[in-house]
Amino acid sequence: MFTVPLVGAVTSAPDFAAVFVEHRVRALRLARLLTDSDADAEDLVADAFARLYPKWRAGKVDDPGGYVRVAIVNGARSRWRRRAVARNRMPSISGASTAGVSEDQAAALVDRDRIRLALIALPLQMRAVVALRVLDDLSERDTAEVLGVSTGTVKTQLSRAMARLRADLGEDRDE
Amino acid sequence: MSDERVERALRDLASGESTLGVDQVMVRVARRRRRSLALRVGALSTAVALVAGVWSIARDDSGPSVEVLPTVTEFDAHLVIARSDTSVDIVDQDGRFVRSLAPRGDFATDVLVAPDGGVVFVRRESGDDSCPKPNEIDRIDLASGETTAVATNAAEPLLDESGRELVYRRDPGCGETAFELWSVFTARGAVSAATRRSESGSVEGQRPIAWVDGVLWVAHYDEDLGTEVAQQVFTPEFRFGDELFLLPRDGEYATDAFGGRYAAANTSEMGLSLLALSDSFAVTETLIELPPGSAGDLAVDASGDHFAIVIIDAEGESALYTWTRGDTEPRKVLEGVESVAWIPADA
Image (cartoon, rainbow over all chains, first blue to last red; front, side):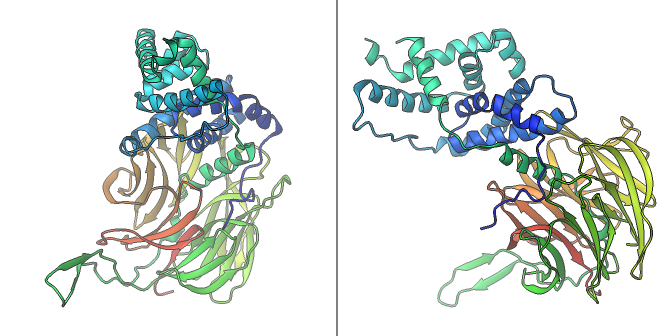
């Protein structure tokens, strides 16, 4: 099978490699919450950095992390629309075995499965609000700016999303 | 139930191992550059033979059912293809090997065929890190196979309608530079000295898409963070901001010219489709939906009836499809193709 070689590709400046390393993990964490699989998340992140590169090289990007964040959210929006139908047919995601692990570890695995399914059930914008506010620790104002909505919308959607996630995770373990 | 538990589960879900590296990003950067607006004026040629497409109805004698088969027009034409393995070959319209035109070498990014079908131009991109990079355009005589280097440090070649003047952007491979347009004349195997035609602002976001009557048409490619992609074409003298016309903003294109009109394979979030464009690049018709992927290259024969499209799928693998007006669906003819051009039927 032909593998895309770096022949014909663009050689990255060392500084861009440093930018990539600096923002890679955070970008992947955000993307994982906005996509349905790790492979999709990596794809989204690679695309976001590929979009960043020419702008960054031209000196047009002051905040590479912010640029990548917006590109990831916008990319996820595109995919969300394209895959809306397929998503409705998705089976249960993880199927992770809890055999041979402690009770706490098993509970964490169950939570992970449930939260993934619960996230998938959320509208993308709500999911993005959760990812940006909870995981990326963005302020309401910054989250609103990334998503192009009002801070009121961010507050409302975060509240609704957390309520739904709490409900989907179940009350049993806390009672 | 607490928000802490939800947040803990979210952080756990978001964590994980990944092998994603900057090299994979840079391959995408290269692909994004290559697949955007690679127009081939040089693919202009005389018409190839055409048998009009019709619905084919095959009747099964054992029963009353009637199967309606996809229409696939039969015609006779050859194409020049640059393969992913870096070789350049001539194949027929079904993808069958006819003969080798150039052996493996540096990565062949562009193939152009002169309107008389006698000459093929191949642009190869060096994989080394030298500066300037010897990104070379070769002229290959189809009859004799004689190969002549006509330009170095060159990118985004276009042919004029006569097939004698080749214009290209100087690309020394040392970072972004000014947009320098150069040209050479070739005829009967002789090649003129390269001449600098003009110089303007940054290369960034500018794509030469047509060289017609001494006028270079440039598309301005402005990625606006994701779903919205603006592409504007400006006046030939690079008066940026002096907008003449606007391609649809939602996609990326591979384009080609035929008889003063244009076609585009448009990659948008709605999918990949083949569009007919007017001489002012306005979309006049959506010709057909294409298989999922992005457009790597597009070639239209001079009649404007036959289309060859390189489609890059989600895994980054590229394949050649053909489609003829009247056909109900495009046909995948060959995998591992990077660039394509029609050879005129009477060449």
